[in-house]
Image (cartoon, rainbow, N blue to C red; front, side):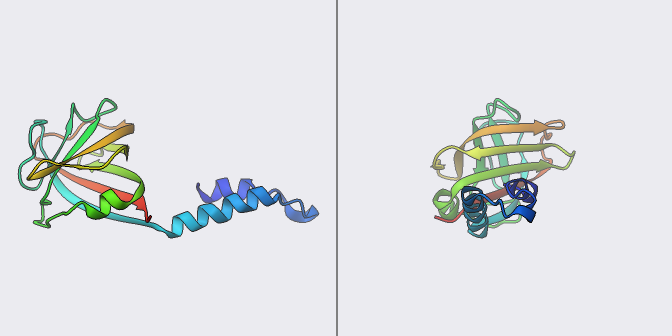
Length: 149
């Protein structure tokens, strides 16, 4: 919930007419936001949907609204080794993929990641995809945001 949505729940208070349920909604939302964590990881896009090699990310069946699985190598483009423990423990995980050509894809994680050895399959539901899909070898940022359990 964004600030303007919260403020819309609180009409002009000159009459003291603040609904307790609306105030509870706002407090609950603020608490949830305080428990949110996020991180950005750099990968190189792999146009093929097969097993992503070192530092690579790909999507199956393809980038866009039909994507159901984000595939991330266990190692980022910069050499950071990911364990996926935090990703799998977070609640309400949101993913944003941003390509160098202004492509942006928003998705939610729909289940636990599946260890495939050198990479993970992350089940997703894509909410939106704008811009041209990344091309092979294009730098892609993967933003992960979720609520601590």
